[in-house]
Length: 182
Ligand code: IMP
Ligand code: MG
Image (cartoon, rainbow, N blue to C red):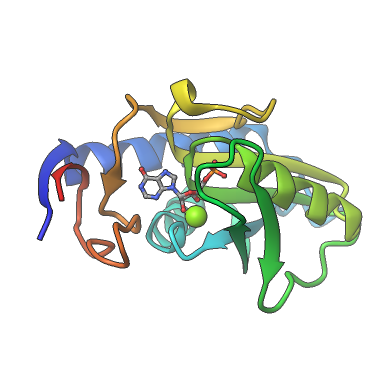
């Protein structure tokens, strides 16, 4: 079993999620003549499921309506390769024609996954993409991409908790932690 050490507390995550929701709602376009602010969220499975659930409810507290959908992408090829290939698996997100999409992921690492997801959503008819990640490991970036909304800048460590896993474990931890040894 790996040893983990808390990096960002439950309380700090919650406060940051609330602040992100405020920022997003302030920026978000009004959807139609009804005056409603509708955020069309697409969350990346599996890692973003907890962040997306908390962010959706924070957006609601800020007065937005939230449509929630999901997509799953997988990297394939040798894990040591720097230019990784990514593919979409499972059901694609629906009904994004002409919409501005809030693309939500747990962590921006090399950037290949988010780059691929953005291109795919635009190719399937989304008008624009705004991306929101809880964590950014800037040091590891390979693709030319930056998220529009970032929860926390973090150092290059392997992260678990709050949805993120190590070998399918630790997603349920209520805080963000780093793996110390395996
Ligand atoms: P990227 O394509 O390298 O940016 O990878 C992004 C995906 O890799 C994230 O959505 C996570 O699922 C996973 N990932 C990257 N770094 C970590 C980490 O430190 N812990 C857990 N998962 C990670
Ligand atoms: Mg992921």
